[in-house]
Length: 322
Image (cartoon, rainbow, N blue to C red; front, top):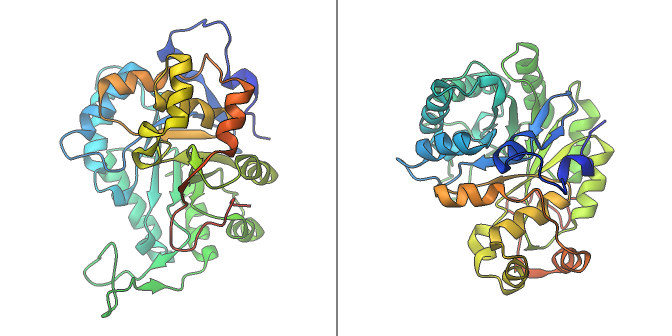
């Protein structure tokens, strides 16, 4: 069973520092491992900045780093991790996630892809390895990340989920990853994986933020069916949250930032979340989301609020992931 109750999400009287709270608030995966609810995202972190961001985030209390091969910055993420470990933070205290890219779904490509990420991150194992998207691309001679046909369209490959998942399971067997999961999979795709999985996915990472079309309660209900923890990425809606008047009004009422409101609301929906910033000030601010609550009315407003943002392309997501 997944343990993700209110005692883990909310603490009315602050018995710890904000930093300690961020490190201890966690979801229990179906493997029994604890995954910190708040992670540092590294997508689109600029060269020369991500190493410092990772190192500083771990210094102030983050204990979850979310990476991916296709972010093209895993070497710098690894440098930040190693600097933090050298400062006294233990490897086993930090939960590290990475993701398998679309060109590496074939049986012979999965393990080499993981080994490349481990080498870049300078780690012996990952805590979580996700299939980044439920689509596969051709791995051509140039090893292009987005291989194209002559007409410029993406060159897709027809690789069954089962072929990829069997190799993911072997990574767990070999001790190279502690848990495996999926990202951007809709309900039908999750059902398909569950129909043959020997080791079930522990996490499904999906885009989720205030104003986005979708049904958080429906997502939670579906994930609960399989004891899969939902994790949100792009919690700021690509920046739309910062100028959103609805989110801004709620933030003003609590003397909080729009980012803090977005993170608090997402966590209240029983999602884990990866938030991305390179600013030391914002890294600190984003930790302050565990010991205060939105009112029932404010939560209801954000639950039903839509501002026209949508889910990713490639036909991977349906209206509510359910």
